[in-house]
Image 1 (cartoon, rainbow, N blue to C red):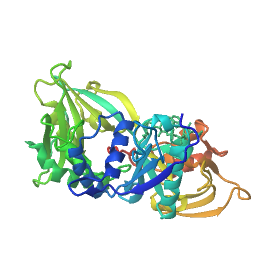
Image 2: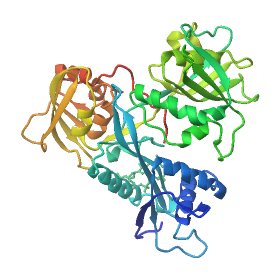
Image 3: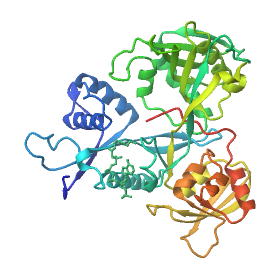
Image 4: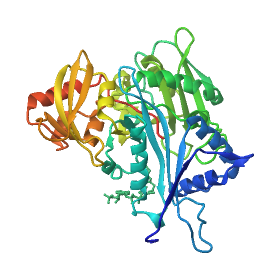
Length: 433
Ligand SMILES: CC(C)(COP(=O)(O)OP(=O)(O)OC[C@H]1O[C@@H](n2cnc3c(N)ncnc32)[C@H](O)[C@@H]1OP(=O)(O)O)[C@@H](O)C(=O)NCCC(=O)NCCS
């Protein structure tokens, strides 16, 4: 379909024209909603989205054709969309790495598989690395798309269901108190609590502005209108400081058993996390709580009096990382063991290809790009994808080696790599973008 067309690619901020969205911005949203099978955007909603996008400092990219036949969508409507913003990634030990986030990737069915995604993403990532960003990240609709561009899955969440009938009790949920609140208070409170969570949680990505509107029930999933079924509770520590919230919805009387669905559960401490679960389990007329974003090493089952009431019903890969600058990225994080390794990196886009010497002393790495592949014998050989998966400690080098994604001839070196990259807890990202 539509063979031989030339595409013009433009990048721009989301913008207003007087009281309404400017045409280029409105068309871009129309194309994104089309790509993700949403209804056409309400024109009256666009100013709110544009304000939110402006806070995120997003850059919108569209690909355009110069002409279309009569009655077809006109050429001002992009045939492909792409969006970016910069936010921070918690890479462990409270360190936050500025990261290039990719979102809103769509290509119109009549223009797919002609290299539009490849062109947009390679030009964009190339520009990001030239600007000095060491890492790119995205969340993927399908696991088969982004490997060819150097991305590897790096964080995971479990979808869990917790039975909250008679046997439910959370042990050790002692400190502080929980109170019900109007969800609207989360507009201001949610970002503050998220900031603490983000600072404490390896794998967390800083949140875009839209989150606070959604968890506060101001924007529902379909439209940017208040969702009156959203409920909220807050946790107060012993000093009366709010250090956690849960935003949730009752799934409706049609669902058996009666179920609460957690939209967002964010806390600055384990005590607040357990106490909010204790609250969720004490909601009468409900027998089950569903939480789609539990940590892989969730403490909850260990804190339940009946751990069999906790079921993992699915696992999702959340964050896909792509190291753009291995020297910078590897030097920024802290390590769990000292030692020296020579890493040969292979990059499907060529940017990070080469051999790197990494010396870790007192948990800090110094990394040098020694040369292209060649004279120096590498201890491990790895694709930039697998190195990006390894980066936060969400997978062990041993597992990557067993899968054939990492080559290492010496078991003692493999153990050293495992120990170096090990993280105190599994990386956990509760932000989708
Ligand atoms: C995914 C999507 C953006 C791909 O766009 P595209 O312009 O057709 O992709 P390209 O032509 O640039 O293809 C680049 C490569 O990716 C591959 N590819 C693209 N989509 C793929 C998919 N869904 N699964 C597997 N491989 C895919 C192509 O085969 C091509 O491979 P090659 O370069 O090794 O030959 C497009 O299919 C789309 O809009 N999908 C619906 C929305 C969506 O899923 N967006 C992603 C959100 S994270």
